[in-house]
Image (cartoon, one colour):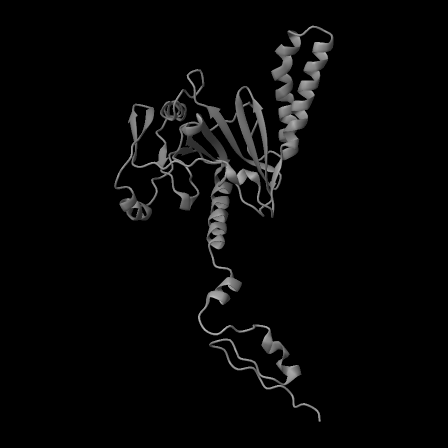
Length: 299
């Protein structure tokens, strides 16, 4: 199950190009939520250099089939040193089978967000996708990191990396360390966004962008990882709006339930449909005109 942590006051301290996030608990945060909601968001910081994806050659907008072919070649390269260190014989065949299994597992990991809820709703990835919008996700773990690939109409629009927080990691041992590394990388302090369930944020985020790509660093330190997301900026804004509308509709009261809980006598909404045939008048729903009288019965 997803663990959600609530953060209080958040401030970003930047010295030169090194950013760090300081998180503390504010006892009066609940009383200030209304004031925070009325504040406009700070502008999204623009990085000094274009945001690049790794491995080289990977890009947002690729067809799903091209992403699969791309990573087949990446996996081949990953196994080059293993093949070199393995003698010809049964062990070499085992390595070949392991590589083949990894290549097959990648497309088989696909999850479609169609009409039926998925188990992904119970993970920190909830809020990263929409249902009924031709969206799918695939996953691949390599070199100690899990990467999620999100597709919209079979085109890659988002990559979500789950990077371990540890001393030997490229981003350091803590979320604050990671934000410092990313601030150096992008050359500007990021924008801090506090956890806000109404806006689909289940944790603190710090973000940056260039003209087409939006980068989000998500605090998942309670799992000893950081989520680093690269997404198409325009499509991300569109899909966020779809999620907001879906959440609003989900909270609406079903018409059938509203009819039952409404005050006044219970009325069969289908009763008046038979009046023309039975010649009997039924009670009209409150506030509506009485049904017309039916034709006279034949004697």
